[in-house]
Image (cartoon, rainbow, N blue to C red; front, side, top):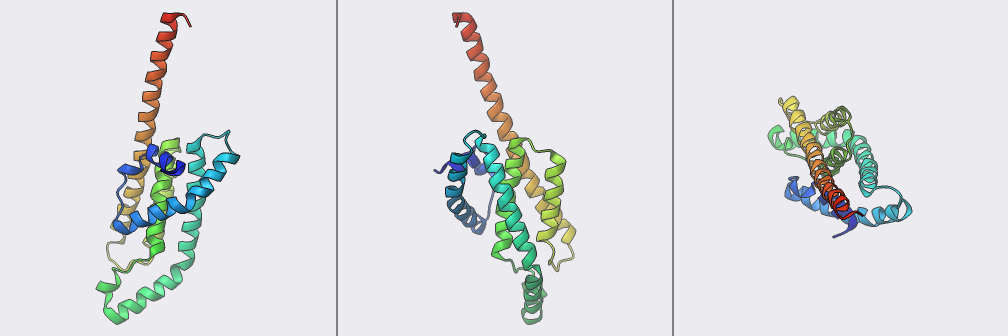
Amino acid sequence: MTPLQQELEKMGLSTLSFSEQEQTLLEQFISISSPFFDNVCQHRADKPAQDLVLGLLTKSHREAFDEYQATQPKIKELKQLFSEQVGSEHAGKFTTLNQAEVTVISSLWFMAQGYTGIDFSYANDHAQETAELLCTNLQSTAVDDEIQHIRTRFMQAYYTGVEHSQNSHSSGSYFKSIKTVLKRFFGR
């Protein structure tokens, strides 16, 4: 397991749910990003690893978000073409790999935000913005419901990070308390 994956696991990665396609993209993301993360860790050894993960994921989210946003006109054209050729019901099933990529990276990013204590309102605003972007070209009457579904999924990842952070900090403080008591008891 790479150091990046280890840090993501500490933050709650194993409790996030991904589709089969998203799981494949997640594995690819970790594989591709791990050497960069290792390099950053070597050059920034003075920084906590979870802060470096957050930085990596912030950069990755921004890149995926911007790339997805740039492709929206072409995606809209493709969906229109599908709608004309095979009907709007089938066109509504059309998704792109970069849509799944944004979903995976964003889920990780929100999890890292929760773990590192980023403010809820900041995370919620970005979850809303990302969900709206992912639903830009939906031709469904339930667009608002889909936006809320995606935003909720991102915020669940955020709360996964919060929960894992609290668990790791509480167990750490528990052991510190025991250590302090033992030091006092044995006079060291």
